[in-house]
Image 1 (cartoon, rainbow, N blue to C red):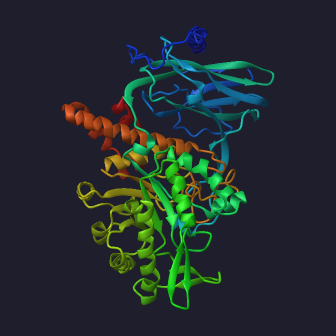
Image 2: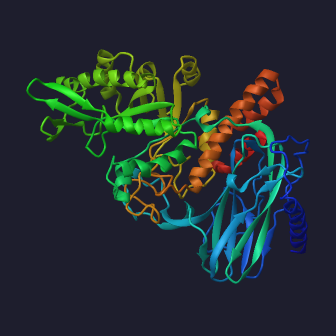
Image 3: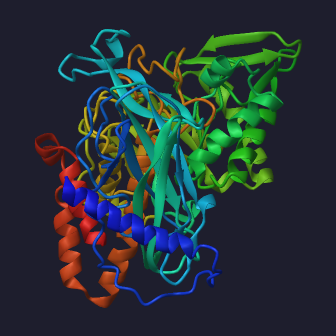
Length: 576
């Protein structure tokens, strides 16, 4: 105890000296000769009798009614320039406290280089209702809400502050630093201050080491992050008319959050009910001709591209689950018909659309990055649809998500294979890469790990990105980014999916612990690719051997036996 308090006193004194120098204007981005091996402060806590504050481990699930004791260092790994790095503080209230706030100073080096407060974000983490998921209990699609025991999980990052904290409870705080592109290499120090009504302030020291390497911007990352966006649930939750001006305004910050994570794919529906499809199909029964309205589709794609999501446009809807297809007549009447692939009616519906759609995409300059996409469809149906596409517009790209089929390997420019249930034959991802094709993997409600379920260990959100690197794949897909339910801010449980499966961000542009850890994993993938290329070019066989050894741990057997955190930690140490 005395050792901790003495250490804290010394560090606070050092921070005070640094902060006293805050008014001195240093030269921005001036490189320093520094020893980045300087030890982090011993894990410390601050306690004033009403609250205890400490830095924790971002891989830990904080329990609401259990005092946290796994003290750690803030920002415990070396940061790159242009990287977003995060730490988590844990506050324990000994009594009810009002107007609790958490503020972080500017971070400064000894020579006055600064990471300003504008690069630092602070979010109180709220607890949500979730459930445990018994993976041995059969098909997750058959489960009912409330079937499994309810649990409280710290996950939602809130934008509101200050907060009230009840006595004998924990309040996590998520702190992120977006290291500026032009930050000088060095050791940055600062202080976090916790205040509340009728309470003396508490202070926690911060040390952030910034190395010489820099990440490219998220839009330039190699990792293909693919979260399917959803639309109808947003309108239902917000009460905003779907596809209205207000709707697009509401979606903009939510999709910006996705862009900043490195998302590459624009999800679009080209058939379905009016609330789903982005293309209005109009049939003239007099002469059996078709016209198409692409207004919503164009507006959505333009919005996403403005936000930096420019990799590809994935258009779903050619093989819906029930083979239902929509259209209007010239009087505005809506029709819903059922056409099975392989029938003349199916071909007559899709062939004129594909031809017109291709012309429109070429006019917009989007054809080369547009994919006709299919999710978890049987090979028999796919083999009936591919000839329709090739007969109408042979150059259309195709995306297949589901089991690995050799036939789709030949046809699809983008393949995403379900994890655990299937795998690529040896050498296929490497061969596809030489052909300019992409190979990914995905998880949904049926895969116990790695997954974004709220009952799963947090580190799995980092592990899933490292696993893509280990398997030689280009990225990772999950089926839902924002498929909210009735009360997503508080109750994440749902029918036919474990809690957390359907969304990883919350309404009103609230991120989550799981989403921030996903960003961490994507950045790790990029760093590993950059360093691997450098070590290969320089012939650094020792470093390459350590990387290969670390990657060898990202297997179903290892995560099942040891969890995600040990493999992630070993891999991160290779990047230091």
